[in-house]
Figure: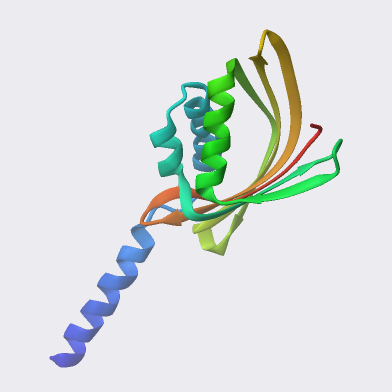
Length: 152
């Protein structure tokens, strides 16, 4: 009887793991598009919820040959500063490539982002090559790592 109960517990645990929604190409690409829709709509609370608390953000500026590492809060602060000084933001994603890792619990996206906005009546744009890691945390997709190389 004890063995039967033990096996039922093991089976229940395994079935819960199997029912956890694994990441897929469609889900990860939809997630990243939603992220940039939230950027355009200036939904700071949604962006905050989409980024893991311990996320690492690394930015390399090619023209200035400088690199920066930011925490989640610093990254969100930079986004809000861009919103404060700019308007008419546009984000165009292209060349999205997806790699599944850890049996669907995490994924890596590489993409090209063309970002444009108007600041002080001047139209500015920059291109970025991005590498974004996504992880399932409590059955929610979250950004855990961003590495970007920008022509700024």
